[in-house]
Length: 341
Ligand code: SAM
View (cartoon, rainbow, N blue to C red):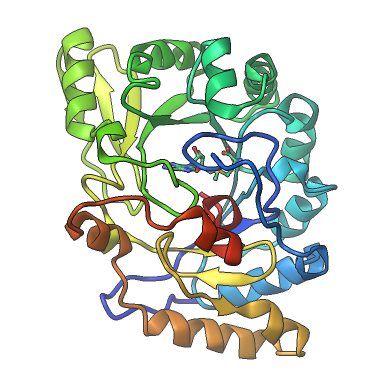
């Protein structure tokens, strides 16, 4: 089915589904607080409910789904959901983003269930730095998870790194070199001032231009790849053919090409990572809306979309964290770990 376009002519194609708001890490740029308000368990969508919403979304144009969280591998029996979604011909792409902690035990089952692609988040290769950044001791587990994913046949694997000034800005080349033997592609993400990033500050942002200048000094000429794509990463090639990406949501946002939306584990649907308000699809679903009614509601909401959240943030003066922790506690839907990255 063809996709509905929003007010800027952007189609709805990508859906990121957070399957749980729980996480087994406490990354400084995402979950820096001591205590969190969690979604009530009775509100969490069952796999059947998620699949029903995916059917409605595919009727409205979505053909790519990424499962995320929180940490998606904390959701029990996740391969069951993957099997259900992989059986839907309307989905051309089914991917998952994980922090890798539990990946070694799950990689083969994810592959067998029909998952197409896998991204692992990894910000550092240094154990003490990993501990400081995530407040957990887990680097060895993540590295074992990456090896297991490679062995299970997830190729090319993607490795997402939030690159931050004064935290891991000296590790870009180490990460590129680490990924090379796996044929994995590293994507450096600029630190974003989203909900959850309550300790964000502009001087911690390692901007794309600076990353490219630093990498150029080490590797020589870096060739930008010219691609027609709505993917968030701009991709680059080193002289030896190694490809890496940069997601510059903070300094060079790409709202004009944004075709993605986000569904939380309890069925709230957000059009933008920066959006304050969403649409409660759980309520519609549990009130008995049919697939056609859900698809029509999704089409109506998307058709009225006008936001360009990251660009609006770029234009903001005295840019600071999006929201204080107290506001996030009042509505956990505003958190990055609830909305899914
Ligand atoms: N737990 C999974 C993981 O770690 O990949 C999935 C959820 S996590 C919220 C998804 C992605 O969002 C991760 O790659 C994470 O690094 C990124 N992320 C979270 N907060 C961010 C921020 N403030 N700026 C940039 N990226 C962020």
